[in-house]
Amino acid sequence: MSERSGSATEKIMSSIIDSIADNLPKQKSGQFDPGAVSEKVKNKLFGRQKTLHGVLGGGKPADVLLWRNKKISSSVLALATAIWVFFEWLDYHFLTIVSFALVLGMVVQFVWSNFSNMLSGSPSQVPRVELPDEMFVNIAVAIGAQVNKFLSFLQDVSCERNLKHFLVSIAGLWAAAVIGSWCNFLTVIYIGFVCAHTLPVLYEKYEDQIDDFLYNLLGLLRDQYQKLDQGVLSKIPKGNMKAKKNE
Image (cartoon, rainbow, N blue to C red; front, side):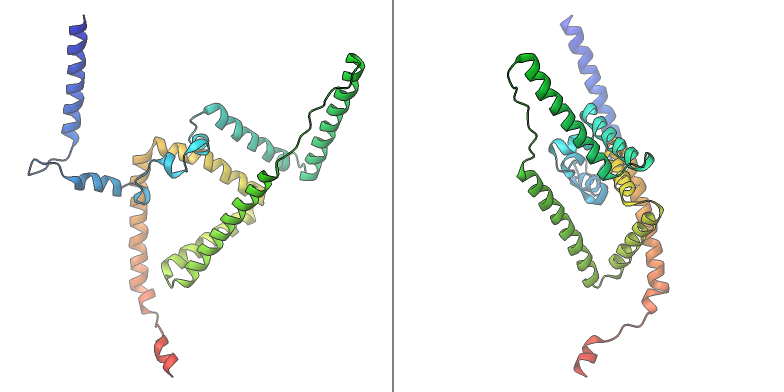
């Protein structure tokens, strides 16, 4: 019985190896060409060599974004959806939600402390909610770091004298302004949150197809930019800054 299973396993492995060998590019020299591997790495989005889990930082945040634990990921997405529904569809305000939550917490603590004293005859220790100071400090530091990084990026693009990067940044800010005119800031944050919890897992599932599509799209955009550069941008007269400084 074991011999039969071993022979069946060998047949399956040999068929898999043969199919992989048939799909590999044929080399004239009959030796392994490392260029095939490097070319495959280049076809990755932005030339990345890490896995998508590593690109997202790894750890629990990446697990949530890639739906490694479906219960946690679905709970986070459902909580964000509930918050958006409360503020957008039900027209609740932030101060209203906070006030109702504080009233509910006070009522629960009042009933707990009084009825437990009446039933047991001795006052009970009601648990107190205390948020650590480090949490607020870490949040403020993280937000400040991202804001400074974004401002530094805009300043670098403005000062590097690269017209392509400058126009792309202007187009991105213009698109953000248009989206902001269609919906408010909370809706924009919710859309970004939903995209962050859906696009990575879809990209991980259809990675090769998306990479091919994006590279084809980038190639078309590059061709159009070259035509624009040759037809319009190259004809714009450029001033001689050194001559002006000498004068």
